Length: 130
Image (cartoon, rainbow, N blue to C red):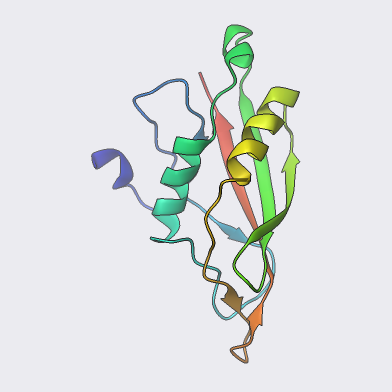
């Protein structure tokens, strides 16, 4: 897929303009030896976000757009927990992210410098752009 071939840190656009755009970047918020891994890796995670976070219809109608910061903790069992959404410009944006978050598959947990499985906070910017 040529849309997925750009490097990490780039923004990629989907053909479907009614989908938000997740940046291909995961921002760890603490020092860990091994980051948690989404099934299939970082690109698969970005693709999963793009396929599961719906751009709310009322926001499209109102021409609302913006970037939100999604953060969560991948716990020691690989579950994504403690979702926080910053800069949600509409309650429907928050709901769309929450609905996707509830369906997120398990991750491979992260490890600390001693190789022990540890919870890791992950932050991901998601751009809602018309």
